[in-house]
Length: 303
Length: 323
Image 1 (spheres, rainbow over the protein chains, first blue to last red):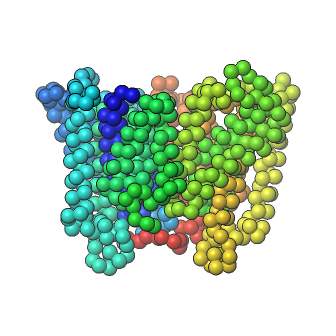
Image 2: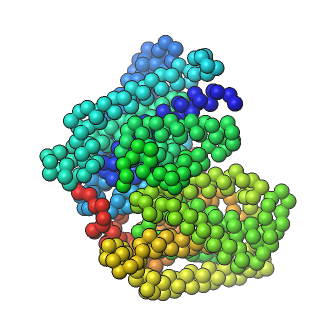
Image 3: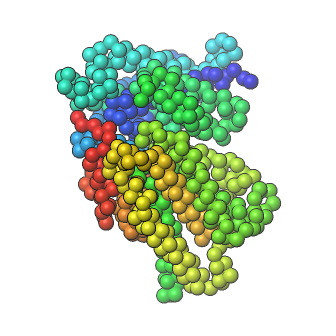
């Protein structure tokens, strides 16, 4: 078996892990499975596409490739703006829909259903604006370089892995070392008690949406850069995201990342062993296995 | 001309009634029990493919083709879909309420994949043709064919409606209602919520399988494209519009939403230039999504109103969460 599948799995797993952190945070703090999370990935990717295209029009030097990478400065700049916009999108949806349902004391399943409606609307809106034709950030081709051990990777792929690593460490430090991180964990433990203890629950919820959306945006842009940008980009990743969040244990940031890597590597292995057409079933198999054997996941607390 | 119109109306209504069957199945799961199924398309597909395998004539290069009577196919489709629902339910119903939703989402993805890739069994992307149609001997006379199929489907829906109404009033239905209203009290009376939920989920899945079988036989041809996630969304829109928890609402919602869908699709293909039609179709789906959210926000009881199913679900439930 060609060891290259390890590299492919690692990269796919890093993207799944970043998305799964958002799923696991919203799940543990807002207490529902957000079916619209995949659409935050897609929106992040398309927002960055539109913004970097706009920046490229302003100044052609911005679209000149930086060093060994396939993209110019317009993409990193657009990424920062897209992260903010995706975060605002998530906050807007919460203000218009989820917040109202929450303040009414709606059942979990009503929120799940609303997220289902949101995912439909957001995804088809992208299809309406950008059509379903695949898009790319650049047309430049990249040659994969040898990185030892018989593995090859393009500079873009290595950069993406680095960004994912930095993002995960940053979120982990935020959760464990800062006041807002402590408040987030308190709310996930017991929202009523946290409220009584003086934690601003509304602020925590806003921060959670923003962080989840920001990570989703980064994951979406990475997927768009390394594969392609499609309106279904996020929807097709939704099952792997859920599988990773549940495998890692709901609420655990390192768990979500590790589980994301496991899902990505298993997918890559399945492509080698069984065939590429069964790739999408891998997450389902993992999901069923976790629910059967250890429903609280690798790092989750007992329910 | 008018005869053509009647034949078309019969075709349209028969299709709408097949959706009404799916909607009735969803109503058992969601309306009466509060189980969220995002994989309706999967159970419908299972019913359609099983029935097609049982009833089609033997075909070269494909497993199956047992040439059995249509009724056997329908029952087989319903049974296998029910079995699939039972397996999914047995795995997830005892866990958190949204794990079932995630699992059914996974089932939908996986069934779609199996249908596409298990070519010797399902015909792959080309699907299965030559599925025997009820009253196939009348096919030369479109009007008689259309009307007799409509009558058959109406009879199925009516029978299902009466059975489900009866079931809702039976001791079993009363237990379901009791669990929905106050799970702890029902448990204290010795009823096991998990078992009743699992039964309701299985029955709902079997009904969806029946719908898939009936629809496959009516059209005479099935392919993976018929069972994309959009089918799940449509059935949800039908039940929400009709009012969940209400069987008459489920049927009315199916006819209404299917009518609106068919009309707007016809309008799109008539007035929108061909190169823009895909975009217009996606706008149609945006409307379903926004409509779903609006109804959840503004009219959680649907048009006909639930016999306080959703009301009690939205009102006071376990694990409620206030800011």
